[in-house]
Length: 459
Image (cartoon, rainbow, N blue to C red):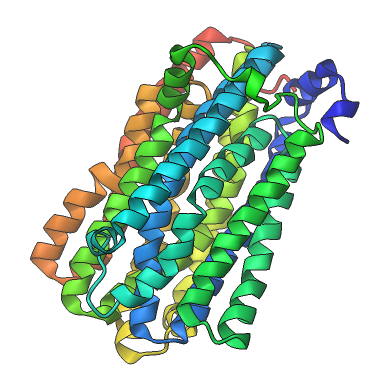
């Protein structure tokens, strides 16, 4: 049912009275599907490009770092505004929700334009900084061109998607993301195989699919499927609103930004061992991200539930939603990771059958799969603190696995153990992040219980 057919009271009741397992699953299934389709088309790019050669496979990993930069700003404005909007709607303040929605949208589009201009002007230095070798650079340049041209649409799509999710309209967000992802897969096949455009075709397909996703997501706002409205007249005139969005979204910027820096350093360390090592780590990261998307999708269904109910002072539901999301994510990711242990070489060979790539990638993938058991708590805790507006804690936790822990681990382990150390860095960071996040979560729930002494099984 469209939001326009629901009164604000009905939407409020849905978010604050629907049993937690049902509500999280309702919101989590569309986001999980969106994440899976997004990762499937990323993997399709890897598969199609891998058929060109080892150096072309390495280019995918290089440009992945570039996409992380674009998404860092999109998620900063998207998660920042979405968290605020959900809490404002929980407090039944629709006007300010529209103000934050509009402001974040135009800010993200402007940030994307700046990335396009800077990236095109300094493409070769940027790609080398991201870890490109001389043999990978020509392929990375072709792939990156249309990614850069689509940067404003990619960044602002992150905002539109997250606002829809935080309003509890995850199904509409799913339509926009999955349609673009499916079209990208067919675009790869047509442009790379049918027209013989190679890596350039993959770049064109990805760029066009981002624009299509943007159009579909923006239509959801034009068609009145949201409570918040995006219109120039709603743009804030108060810089404090922009700063609040940025502060709330800072954990996402740090997570994605440090992820880009980490990808750059990872590629830089891997290229010491040749294009095969760069290609292998790129493939491993894509497979791990695909499995990770199961937990992340459920977690993104949890975010609007926690934000909305925190704004409505239903702290018992915040606690219940966290525990349910953590348990489901652990079971999903753990089961898939356990099954994947038996097929590591085959999974790597599916994307690039070269012997060196399979040898390096299989051992690295086994380590990554083991570390997946430790990720759900870290991810859920980061999402919890960001959704309720505890920005400092969320920023710290979001910075751990992709930056504060990963970068030292990469430098130390690669120096001591060579390529084996490169493969061990991310798993080591994931395990350490788990033990750092745990006391923050325990302390928060102690405080939350004091704020709301009602029993958690109220619903």
